[in-house]
Amino acid sequence: MAPTSKASPPRLGKALKRGFFGRSVHEVAPDLIGATMLVNGVGGLIVEVEAYHHTEPAAHSYNGPTPRNQIMFGPPGFAYVYRSYGIHWCVNFVCEEEGSASAVLIRALEPTHGIAAMRRRRHLQEVHALCSGPGKLTEALGITIAHNALPLDRPPIALHARTEEVEVVAGIRIGITKAVELPWRYGVKGSKFLSKPFPKEA
Image 1: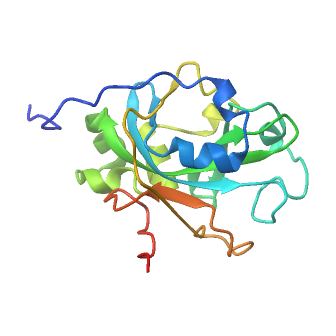
Image 2: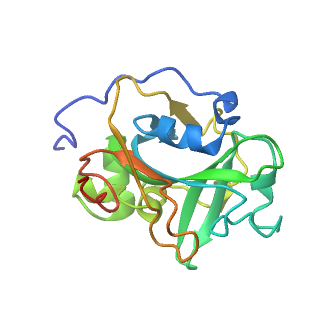
């Protein structure tokens, strides 16, 4: 069998515990860039996220709790999974104190672990396209509604802090129609694994 990668997966940083998420969503979101997300050992480096705060209308929690978004109103450090456009799953990390209902949407990963499994699930070989979008990465990692409300620091989910500094860029969120002016999308500058490039800085 041909190897799926020329290099071994990079060294993992320290495990991120639920307390990591008990801060402002605007602190957690950029701090997640460069961290590693694994589900049953499959995943990669987080290269793109978006922050959502309960005070702005693009957040699912803006109009209060519902059966779908209830997990957002609980304590930080849990997964919020929902179906987008009735087609694919999206995974978010709940942040801030209980009741805040703020979360970070994971938009793209750079695959590093379990690439063969990702290729099998996504039915494609191109590594850059495996996790270059919120729906793509959930399919690649096998994330479904069964992962909703699971803790982020216990199996099958594992998160590890970044092991080296990364240059984080910010821009407006994409794929939404409300609060479109807020620059709450964060990513690795120049990454080839983003869902969409960030506008070039002047």
